Length: 78
Image (cartoon, rainbow, N blue to C red; front, top):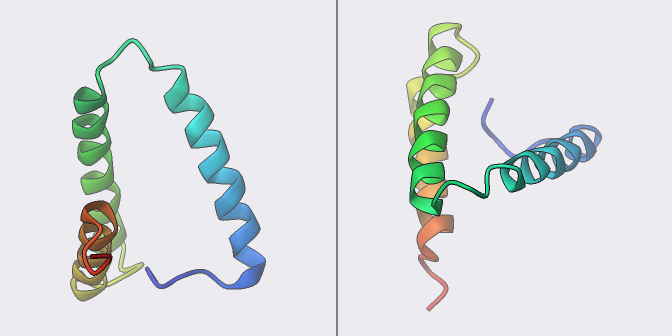
């Protein structure tokens, strides 16, 4: 489930990312670290709900988090 989306879904994801960017811009009064921790809380809850509702497996979530860590830290870009 957490694999990269098909082309038909890619446009929806791009639109969603744009909306999230716009919304996050409205939260500029909060420091970036506060936003990061708040987003972490929401992401954790969303991933937990996906597993509990059998939309994806625990292994899928581990893979997703591994990829997220590498993207966030730029692992392999050196």
